[in-house]
Length: 491
Image 1 (cartoon, rainbow, N blue to C red):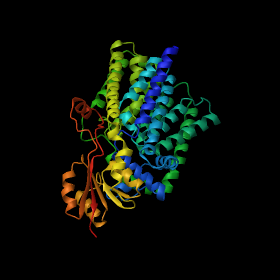
Image 2: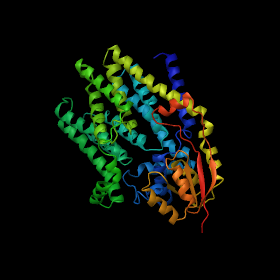
Image 3: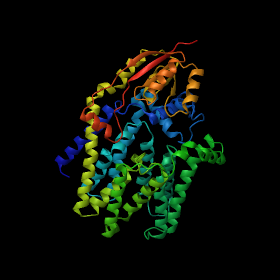
Image 4: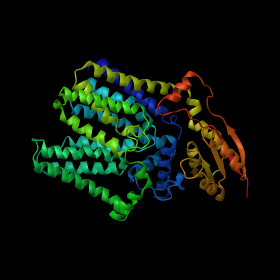
């Protein structure tokens, strides 16, 4: 790589990172998962508990399914920076950027060419779901960081039957436990270690059975040793842990193939990866690097069958890196055919075009999406230390005013929710203009001693071609802070 190419890549990387840091608070508008997890973090900060306080009606018990690590990290960041949209989203962004660097290290391990390496990174960096999750306030990139770090340790494990091998195995196990204690959804990626164990026992002549058994026993000990601490601290016993997860509606709704199949561009990425694999198998290209197949295929297949919505892109950012490494490896590194290379470049161009259009939209609508100016416009109507029932995008207003927050979305049946709000005499009721039930709420609450005190319009009402295009792209960013504010006037 010559100096000019290095300089160009350095500039492009800097612009990419700077863009995401600058726009972190602007896109998206505060949303479901972000606010749900932020409210659990708030519960942890205040009481050392894991209640999803914003949806306490539908999830009244502690939300223990995720484990404690993400919330502990979020609490640490918030303690330093304060509770804000920026601090809540910062960890997603930082871990996402680190993952791009880890992809580079893994591609170098597979001896990818420079072009193939940067193709893998570009696929991930421009992919819409990855970019959405960089600003999500979720834990997906944190758990992926721990898993990829475990793999980077795995490829450095020595061949001998000695203390160093045992220590490396323990470290891998601890990292896998940390991944699982961030979110158990990462369990799909553990399939790599299962297949790697079988391959080392059956097909890898370079390693002795004793070495393999030592390594994987230490991995198991490291994992069980750390994970069992959480089991007994949170559930009291293994039986309590099993009972909780067996009956958890969160586990049940997020595991297995999604029944309502909705085709999306993600499906075509999987299909393209399959085509590249079949072509490579036909050309016997994979015999050059079986480890690439072992690292990617089990994980991708497990993702499809274990993670609900795997084929429709619901958590595509979790499998992004594995698909990108596989596609880049098969089409740019192991295969000399021009057709697949051009198809891969087209995929990057497609993702890059979406990225650019969204970046332009966020830039031109920044003033309308600024959380601080929009929240200031709403905050002047809110008195502190009260209770607010509102849509997700108004969570930070409630938190910064030291108000109890109850979500109007994803929080149980409408009649039960309204009964709870009236019974507890919530002081404020804030409804987004985009809420599907906005007109219903407008009529309903005014019948029950609530007065409309403000109607705020904070969006561009233009309906030009650009706005129509934006609304068709994956992961809409066209929502706004526009709302109606009601205040309780009864006794």
